[in-house]
Length: 259
Image (cartoon, rainbow, N blue to C red; front, side, top):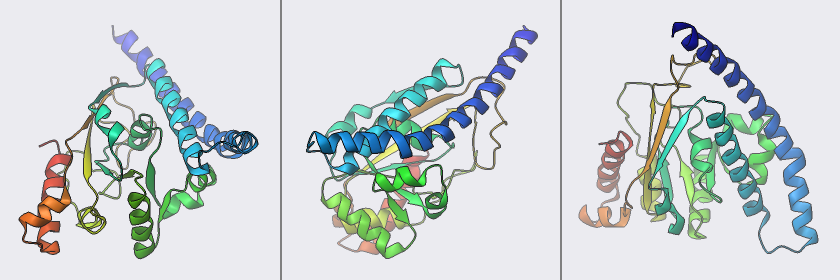
């Protein structure tokens, strides 16, 4: 029994390194070969879909197959609860907690089209910058320009994925948010869906090295909550944005911790 556990652990360690390599190489192939080819074909065939939506759909398919690969290799298991709720959402903020490195990959593997806010460092990453640029993701560099980009895409009915913590969560520590996400929702008058993520046992958490894998296969559970209307909260706070932002932030903190 101990030998089998050791063999399984060594296999998962090897397969984890392999998947990191596949992800890096795949990002280059996607950005510099697959996406340009698909865009060229869509131009020739005079497709009515925009470049942005074509690229985001390519990302969705890539992540869908990547997550299936992780599962087939025995690295992780997944449970997706309530994702059918997102199918009819338009102009909605999807807010998720961020316990692991692959949270974004898992969520987007279920979303054929969704905008995202990308931190400044990734725009300098040669493996992914071409993809995120072609997908028209919003750079988180200048606060006002970032908000203008958010408001613009939400007003067009596009959905936007955001990790309000800004970085990965610290394991076993409570989530404390600034009011940024609440203020965005209130200023843009955008409904909110909270996506609560758990990973048991913990893996690829903040400050974890890729080779620091748990003794057994982790299970990810992603659960979509009910719609939150920020305008209703603003009304309950007598139209006072600062009070509404505090109340909404408290609600988000609770839901992002599964309460």
